[in-house]
Every structure is written in C-alpha cells, then in structure tokens.
Image 1: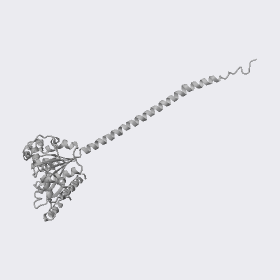
Image 2 (image 1 turned 90 degrees about the vertical axis):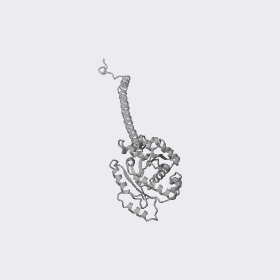
Image 3 (image 1 turned 120 degrees about the horizontal axis):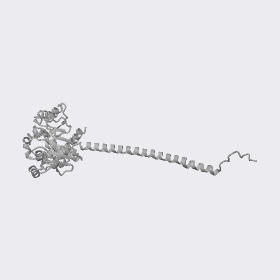
Image 4 (image 1 turned 135 degrees about the vertical axis):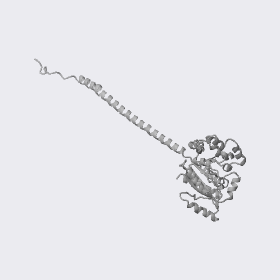
Length: 336
C-alpha cells in the first residue's frame, strides 16, 4: 500500500536551500554591491574633478588679480616738472629738496636736470664732477640727441633712493636740434617711457629751464604734473600769465597734464610784498596754492656751496623743515 505521501514531492534538502542562497548572494547581491561601489566611486571622482577645476579657477583669478595689482603699481610712477619762465624763482632748489625729502621718506626718486645751467646736478655733485659728466656722453643732451632710453644715463647720488640724469651746457642748442625731428614735442616722453614702465621709481622730478619754448614743451609733455615756484618779490609774478597761457597751449597736445599748484619761495613774512603775493595767488581761480612756503634762509646758500640739498645739509634748519612739509603736501596732492 502506497504511503499517503506518495503523491507529494519531498521538500528539498536544507543543503539545496543553502546553495540557492549562496548563489543569489554571490551572483546578484555581489553584483549590486559592486555596482554601488562603482557608482560611489564615479560620484566621488566627479566631485573631486569639480573641486579641482574650481580650485584652478580660484588660483588663476588670484594670480590674475596679483598681476593686475602689480601692473597698477608698476605703472604708478608720477612725473612732476618744476617750471617757471622767470629765472631765480627757486625751481632747481625746490626740485632738489623736494626730491631729497621724498627719498628720505622712503620713496624712490629720479631727478632729471633739463636746464643747461646745471644747477640741479650741482645740488648733488661738485663742479668738477658735473662738468665732467656734462662733457661726456652720460647726460641728458646726449640721450635726447640719440633718442635713447634714459635708463642708460642714470647716475646714483650718495643718498639712498635718489638718482639723477645729469645735464649738459650743450642743452642750450637742443631747441634747434629738435626742430626737424618727427613728433619733436614727445621725444623726452619717449626717452622716459621705459623708466616709467619699469615702476622702479615712485617719482620722476624734472627741472625745466626758465624759458617758454620747444624744449620746455617737451618737458611738459613728458610730465603728469607741473609745479610752479614763484618768488615772493616785487617782480616774482612777472610773466606768470604768460606761463599759464603757455600751459594751456601745451594741454592741446598733452591734455592729461595738470597744474599741481604754485609754491611761494624766498619769502620774507616781514615784507609787504610777501603778503601781496600771497593774496594775489590766492585770488587766482582754479589754481592751488600750497600752504607750505619757503622762507629766506642762509642755510640754503650754504647747502648749495656744499653741493647738497638743505634737507640733508642741515636737517634742523627752518628751510629743511619747510621743504619736507612741501614734499608731504606734494604727495598728498598727487595721491588724492
């Protein structure tokens, strides 16, 4: 007699279930884990690439900003000329002392002696050395004649941060030699361009001769600002109107040129004409009058005799303090 269970299939053995379970784990669950791992890896890799790309962008932008800042600093050299068509106004003395005062404040300064009288050069070197430079080939006259880069004509003074391009007595003929040159009004600007672009100097100060002509126009066209020293004397303002008419003409070809202001020199507060000079200059519309003025001081004459600017020759003197105050005012005016 058949068993009652004969019509029924026997349940699989436990070992069979174990085999099926292992199969599913290894074949399906294992694949799922691998796929999950690969997905995780791909996502992580994508995140890393994203972060790396943005890091490169940030670094590149920072580098670009740094270069832009550096270029801005390098192109920030300010050129100021000291000009007045009247002799004896204190141009060369003011140029040398403002330059020396700026250098003493840690600014890099290049002085350019554009006057055939050599007074700016004599403010730093003795007569024998100045005449030697004037007769040689390392001076402004030779550089202008060959339209050369002024970097090769710079000499170092004994003062830190203060250099000079010396002049020559032959500068008296530069007007005629420039007459036939192409774009003659911009030759000095061309010669100065590499020096300015280098950013080595914070300031370039140019001493112009007491004339109104092609060479002074050259100096003005190469400058960012013009500072006009005026002697506090009965004839101190003689020709000042002609000076400003000339500046207006120069602005037609050099519109960026600005009048930095007027500084009164050789002042004697006890004299009536000092007060008259100050009142007249204050009344000039649109022209800045420096609050700093330079009084008559024998220390200036002694410093000139020693071929030194008074701010170095006798730092405690009244005129040295006045020139330092003027230099600070110039800096504030330029950086405003």
